[in-house]
Image (cartoon, rainbow, N blue to C red):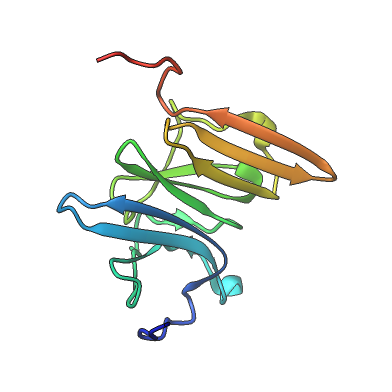
Length: 156
């Protein structure tokens, strides 16, 4: 059965939605989602929303150090930080908490061949590979890489 929580405001992400789940430093499971707001024409920033139980949601927004608006934003956690990129792959933004964002300008750069691409999906697997699938004009592309990691298995 479904239980209805509190209604979400008009600027809550509506479509397409991308989510990441992580454990906080206190051991709680937290879901963070992002997407285009239904009031997209007035939108100036990508504002992630979070929930611990799924009934009530709160915005992770700030007046300064926000992530600029981009179409179809994807959010994911990697190496204890959060990352967002979106349509056209013009920039990637990083945050230690999901609240304040800065543009990534070194060390983790998206391949320039992704610039301008708009129809994509991204995920991270158990081996910490970032997978990006692009489908445009009847052609599909698959990109895979790691952030600040070599692809070798490390023995302990």
